[in-house]
Length: 321
Ligand SMILES: Nc1ncnc2c1ncn2[C@@H]1O[C@H](COP(=O)(O)OP(=O)(O)OP(=O)(O)O)[C@@H](O)[C@H]1O
Image 1 (cartoon, rainbow, N blue to C red):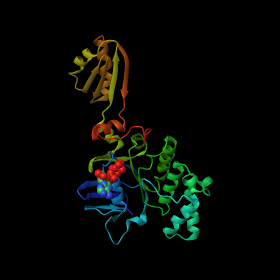
Image 2 (image 1 turned 180 degrees about the vertical axis):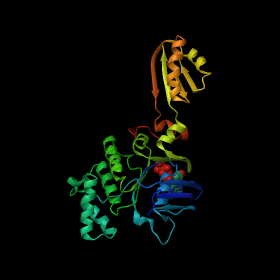
Image 3 (image 1 turned 30 degrees about the vertical axis):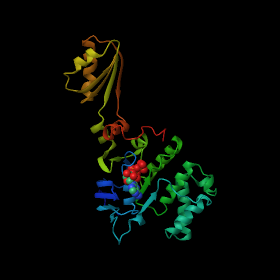
Image 4 (image 1 turned 135 degrees about the vertical axis):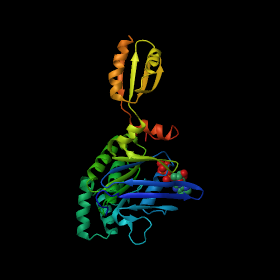
């Protein structure tokens, strides 16, 4: 159990090679208790490898990590007793009912019959499956299966819940349900999940790490990430060509970059407050007629495109996932 203020997950130089493939190249990571942590990166970045290492399914080639105070390579303290895990493609016994499946999982964790019943009913309620508890899993929708998968990962009251791509295969309603569930879990457990769906991560994560080609590009809170990598932009549309505006703004210290296309200009600004005051005055003084003015806040997708470049196949909305 992590002491207050201490990391619940810490990785130091964690490395994994599969033959000649270096899947993880010395990862350093810190996750604090009761946070929702998103592990992001394009295909092949090393996300599943990280989760498999932290859940002791595979062993590191070198380096070390601790989860809830236990080393992932320790022979004495097995971290699996205090974590929950849901794989990318969870294998559920489709002939069982949801209730039977949770009962079975409880038995694997050594719970007594009465504890199993209590925990099973609590979890069915938590994930919104009470009404479908006696139905065969084979008749569940993808969203229901995913919620049952999360319930089975919570049977042992884990301190950390690891989920590999838990929302990627779901439609917007299914994703919303799962994300709301993560928020409800925050009081009980740390949620560590990997995802390609940037809009979802943006909405619920406290902090994120971005991997690319097995390397950590950045670890930060969502706010820090946006401030650091995606400064706000101002888009303007004039009644005339925007080239004059480009010339006028070239000397302004609050302008970081300006792109012009016909009558439109997009400004990347260093200081939004100054820009908001100075730009309208500058347009008026120069007699440039304004049609449209908009301040755009960066999305997590903007940050990604900047960090991993266009070769990464991360998505902004997840609608296409
Ligand atoms: N068992 C394995 N044997 C050989 N190479 C592997 C194995 N597992 C993963 N890799 C390779 O390690 C790298 C990282 O894979 P990993 O599955 O961790 O990435 P990922 O970020 O989870 O990708 P995805 O989003 O596609 O699931 C990839 O190049 C992958 O091909």
